[in-house]
Length: 408
View (tube, rainbow, N blue to C red):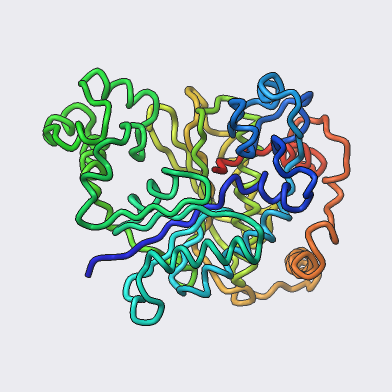
């Protein structure tokens, strides 16, 4: 049975939340990522800021040069996580088959829901309308027969767009797109493809598959499949997940290890929050890096005891990251956890005090959910930045303010 998959992607999420929470910022170029005088990068830019060339992953100093009149704001991850949960609640009202892949995007499997909800395209429009009405935010949606196509469609006409790819129109939809739209085509791969005369997906569709495999190996075979619009990955819901992961692909490949560690902190916080939300703890932490050459590596380590704490996941992920030699720029960074166990199902500790950090984290989540993200703030968020990452909480406050998020 053909699938009907939607990809919902919030528009300029961080910046849009700031503009909504502070109406005086509406219509102004908002740049999230910290002050331009500091050594940081842009996490998100409003569409007003993008008109001046500002983009995510750009150094804040460069963003200030392009848009000196912009409003520069620090990252408020707790706030974005709170609004993200509200978005996911809306999506869950339409289908239980929701796969959240980051704080601001998710896949929905609408296959077989026509009898209950009606045609999929109006359902997607209804999702967008509810997000507008209830959250005063906008989302772009791609509707297609698989996840790959839905993801491309949602990004095609941002903001606040609904793009439908019918099963009979896949080749025509992909053909005019630039080759860089395909997953896995970074600057280096794009240059190699262009040397072969391949600038669009349509040209790649007609190129000999055996020649691609000979020139690019496994990646060539994958690119040929994607050019045909093939992708058989299912939507994986939280209830069926055996692992949780978050990753981000940078608009511009990143070489700065300090900035990459800030991204790692943000990703681990998202992973830990989802662990606690579903009452899970994880035994294994996995780091994922994809370089500019599309070489991908993963590194894993098992925790001494299952955990759902931000600090436990981050400390392991950071340790794994620091052992990787960054011989080239990084295109993608991700962190995941696996070997999940239900909270409370692991071996009991001899001392009750050992469980206090877990109970404190869950209590903090509940307080923020009820009273807002600023009701309870970690001390690291009010400390003056300035020290290099050395494992203490004050250092991580600076990194959080400098975090990178590939927000569209």
